[in-house]
Length: 318
Image (cartoon, rainbow, N blue to C red; front, side, top):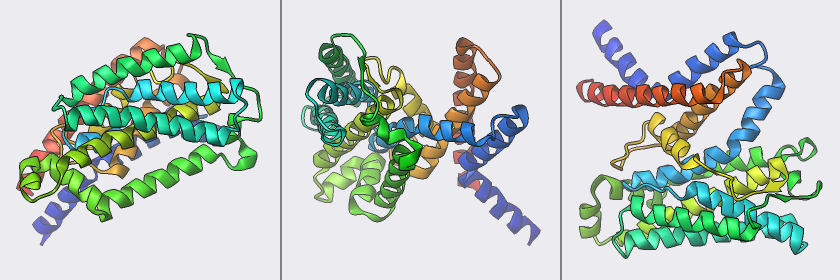
């Protein structure tokens, strides 16, 4: 009986290791800094991570198919730049400006998806090309100069009097995609493609459409993340999102997703993104310089991957 309970407990720990990592790190951060658990700091983390969480979710669905999307950071810049230029130079209300930016993100994502699904490009190569194109277009749109926006426009998305819309939107998107992954045919098929694309194709399912769709979703979420950053800074810039694709991949890996495809969960990926956020936040509060932060983050990613490998092996024996 005791042995059976021990095995159940071990299985719970294995299946939920991402959440335990987050919880332990949260407690450690609270002990290391008196200001970490303050209302202002927690709110700042939520505002800062709204964008990265969306990018990580989009990346997850690409990873589930066994692909990778390096273009999400550049598509973030497209989202920020297009929305800013429409508001400042063409007097658009911020809502239609944001919608057009999301449409642009979908176009870039669909382009990458078409290269992968219909031209048989590797996701790495296709998204590398899109990354270069999107970043270049962002610099062309902005003329290489940050676009400063007037207060009372897109910054409404981060105002307390409107109940911090970007946080509310992010929570709604997390819930939506968690439900989509778990309960819809699209979500189950995406996982199946990553597990065994040949079997899915032989079952008569048009896998190419699903492959294209995951990149389109990643593009839309990346563009929205860029809009969120523009809202926080009241500035649209072509440098938005630099390196964000790597953080998104890291969030997926920390969340237990397999880069070979077929394994990964939305909520765990969000937890992975928040783990990275906590690490960055506590090091900033403790005045750790930026370069050592990158080193520490790299070792944490290695540790997370090793933990997932260990968990996978243990899961087979439990």
